Image 1 (cartoon, rainbow, N blue to C red):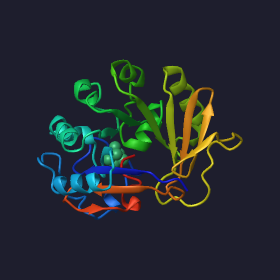
Image 2 (cartoon, helix red, strand yellow; image 1 turned 30 degrees about the horizontal axis):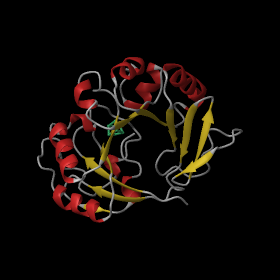
Image 3 (cartoon, rainbow, N blue to C red; image 1 turned 135 degrees about the horizontal axis):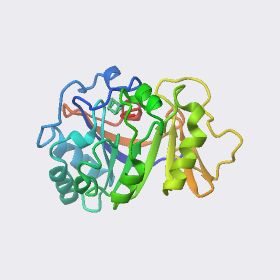
Image 4 (cartoon, rainbow, N blue to C red; image 1 turned 90 degrees about the horizontal axis):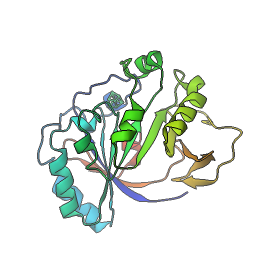
Length: 246
Ligand code: SF4
C-alpha cells in the first residue's frame, strides 16, 4: 500500500446541515465539545511540534460533526500554522455552504475539497437534510484555489453518478473522489468496467475524459496521519478521522 503523511484539525460543534451519514455522533473522542469559538485550539502547540518532528506539511481543516467554515478564527489559525510550520499546505474540507458568503476566507486556504452529494434537490434533502443544491458553477468562479469534489456514494445518489460526473466535468472540475460510507461492508466499485490509471493511498484513480476520479474505500487506505481533536486529544489513528465530514 502507498503511504503518505498528513494531519487533520478536527473541529467540533453544531453543524448547518444534518446528514444522516455524518459519523460525528458515533465518535467519542472529544467530539461533543464545541471548538468553533476557541482560540487557540486546545493542543495546537503540541500538534505543531509533532508535525515538525515528523516533517508533516499537509494539514487539513475539517469537522467531525461540524462545518469548518463555521470556525470563527480561520484567518488567525492559518496565519499561525504558516508561521509555525514553514512550507505547510493547508486544505479545507467543507460542505461548501458558506463559500459564497465568505470567499475571501475560503481563498486563504491552499486548496479545498467540497462535498457535493447531488445536483438534485430531493437527493440533497435526503443526504444532508437541506434541499439546497450547491451553486458549484458560481463557487468555481469565485475560487482562486484548486478545488476537488468529494461525493459520498449511498443508495440515495448511486443512480446519479453519471450525471454528477458529467456535470462536474462540464463545470471544469478536474478532480473528484467517490467515497464509500464509513462502516459500509462489501465491495465498492462504482466505476466497474473502467481501468484505473494509478493508485493513491491504496485506492484506484481513474481518468474519465480528463476528470481524475479516485474511488476511496477507507478500508483499503494506509495513511500516516496525526489528528487534533476539539478537546486537545492527539491521535495517529486514521480510523478515527477517516469518515469525518461527509
Ligand atoms: S457530514 Fe459534515 S456537513 Fe453533514 S452534518 Fe456532518 S459535519 Fe455537517
